[in-house]
Image (cartoon, rainbow, N blue to C red; front, side, top):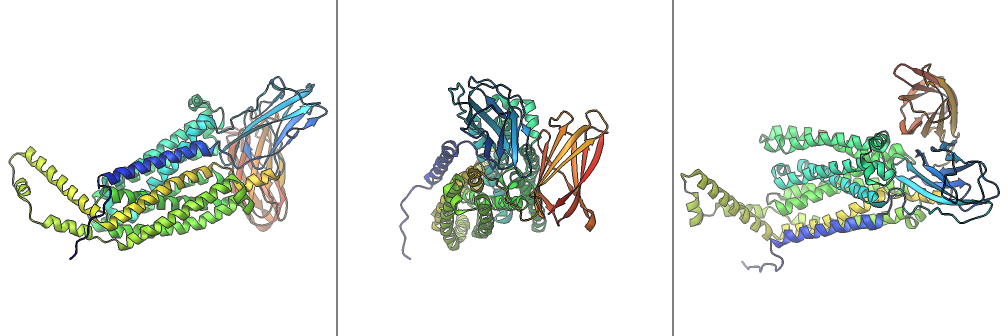
Length: 640
């Protein structure tokens, strides 16, 4: 048999070090992309117009300044400020008035009377329905333009050092989710023996720790991220309470609770499950862990889908479950890839069957990613011009290109997998059956000293591990597979960074429609927006007020519902409980319950409210103002 010369190249010791150095460099590149390229987070809502318009010169001072937005927003005190040429406040309201009608989202502030001529600056800041902060500024002039001491804000909402740290935490959260879910799935579905491997345990636990820490950071920074931009406000209890009352805050708290359940899952996976030797019992436990882990993973993925881009815009009721599937497929593929890389470099025991099982899982994940990605791209981009002419579209093109590169590298991995055998393991077993050397024979002799015997046992274990590593590194198929998987992981790190930037970038569809000055909601095919005003009185103290309801587009199918409650003084009013129900009495349909989410003080909303058929619907509204004061009012509205 002819001998084959060994391949000249890096030593087995240097190869893992080179891999670690490469991954470290890639992580540095990713953070560089996030710091230099992501910029302040744009959001789904956008300013579509104002009165007076930007740069307008009006003859007389207006009574108020109004701003229109493409979609629902949440505002607070000082969200809209009007400053005169000297920098003093020219508006009379600390909190903007909600002037929305139908599908038009509009807010305004009243101005002082008798304003002098000159240039006025309008600065605004709000939170879009998909959790991202938005801000901007413009000027208008009364009489004629003048010099002004007001400098337009150079930093948008969500920018600055707080924005940088928040974006890094957002990226870390995605990375932790991928390692936690993908690593656990890899152990259960591809390599059950990995439950006893210390490197695999560390990978999953580090994923859990990363996701937990990132979620806590995002929760603490949410208030300064959407407001002042100062790190000190992270520990403002009033601000934290306000965050908890919002949809993004509730999503982050829910994620922390689910991570508690994930900790229990990890303890069972690497504890009871790893020690279980009976195959039948282990099979039953595998099924239970798969079901429980799947529920927890789906819940964690839903915390993103329910609070970001998927939760607002067109077809939100379809987009949210699609987004959950997309995230789970990403975790199964990229997290499994990271697990395979660790197993190939750090453990000698993984066999060809486990690698082939992961290959099948990765193929299924890619199919799911393709289907869900096409739908998400259509929903968020909407046109070819938006694909090439907006930042979101350009990032999407980059993401598709990276996926193509990743699939090309994966093709080489599949080729190596097809050639992979367990010959190395067989050679390993054969080598262990060879006659022991003199030194090994001596070390195997009984030793009356227990400490000496333990030392000899450790030496034998180290010798065996070294022999296994030498045999493993000499296998050309495994070496080729390790190199291709390392290349896949390198591309995956950059891909994850681009995906994170996409989640904080204004969708192309919204950007184009905002530039055209039109709202992003499609015009209804039939019917029209429904606007109702209903006074109420619960009978208790501060129990009087008015409920305003907007249902858009006001037709059969999915609708967005907004509810505003004003107190007897005309100011926004919060109540402990608000419920709605829709009934079509002529067809005995309903009551269909609707429980809206609180967006801001006195403002609630519910998306994807289904109206099954057109007709004269009765809308029941239950308002509770205290523990004992409650009233239900109703009004009929033609929908469809």
